[in-house]
Amino acid sequence: TGLSLLFVTIESIQDHHLSFLLVLLCHLLFLTKQMSYFINLMKWRIGPST
Image (cartoon, rainbow, N blue to C red; front, side, top):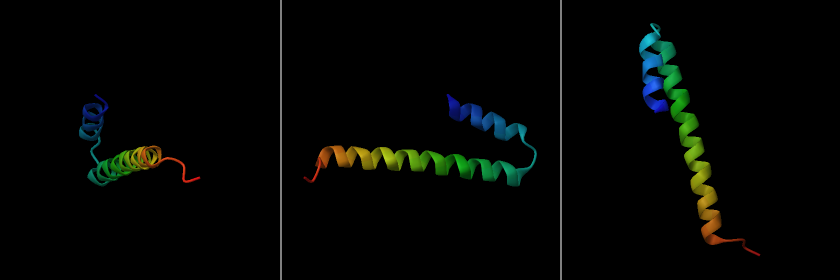
């Protein structure tokens, strides 16, 4: 999976601060994707207000 590939990439990076930032960035991207998907799902369930 892409997650294992991410961990391998982090392992190869020697700078721990850089790897930490990469993990943080990936988590933020994943969370924003999940949130937008969840919001769209809720909009679809509720339906158009008009």
